[in-house]
Length: 216
Ligand SMILES: C[S@@+](CC[C@H](N)C(=O)[O-])C[C@H]1O[C@@H](n2cnc3c(N)ncnc32)[C@H](O)[C@@H]1O
Image (tube, rainbow, N blue to C red):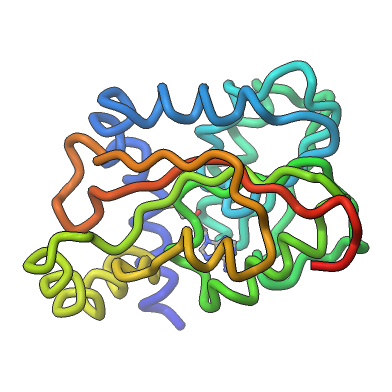
């Protein structure tokens, strides 16, 4: 649909610029800390413009960046030409349908993506399926506020915000969904995303493990 294409073009063009002060205030530091836990074969869903790339440690042997949005993917491909290209592939997969066999990855990364996927539950099931036993899911996501007046606003403006911001939802309880998908949450930090509007400020970040046996 043309309107979606225009939206996608505008978001991809402005994303790094729009995020620059939040990146400086907190996100860059959080990304670095979080991604220091990455290792082995790694998949990043919704890789966007590739902001996580500089933070992947040497313990990561192979990186697959998946980004379904064509405009975002163009930025990503530009960035990957300069960065980490020897251990890296870029794909178009949607988080709900990754074209890889079960247990393909040691680490899966999602930063500011689970707000935008169509189904949070299906995406988390897919992440669970793709991780090896004892594999690690690294996440950094904004979630529903715990302040009732802000929550009310989040519900009210969600349809409009979602349309403008690439289907981003404001009212997801992502930590509960990660737990319900069968993961064992090992580390969970909650913090305000300094400089972001109040309705996207509350974030969680941390590590979650798939069980050692293949059963949930
Ligand atoms: C807010 S941006 C975050 C980009 C990047 N991960 C970051 O940390 O800055 C959300 C990204 O999720 C992608 N996305 C949206 N729906 C998706 C889906 N169903 N599967 C995978 N990625 C998706 C968007 O195209 C966009 O690049």
